[in-house]
Length: 77
Image 1 (cartoon, rainbow, N blue to C red):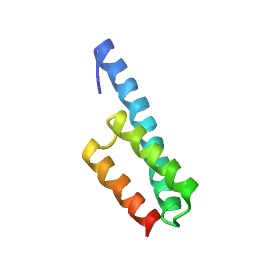
Image 2: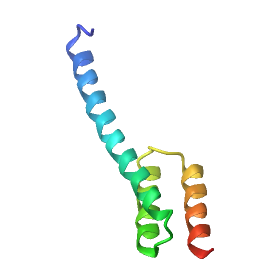
Image 3: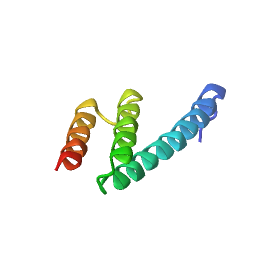
């Protein structure tokens, strides 16, 4: 366990960020699963969530591009 004051703060900050990232990632997965049905509204919401996750560095921008392409493909199929 950390003994230095700044190290203790870093532990707290990292825990908060980890929790926030888990929530965002969970919301992203849920949106993508809903978009699998092919509903236009759910696909646009999922694409928005993917863009937000990529902007925050939660997923890589290339993965975001692939996921958006897959969603668009399913929507147009």
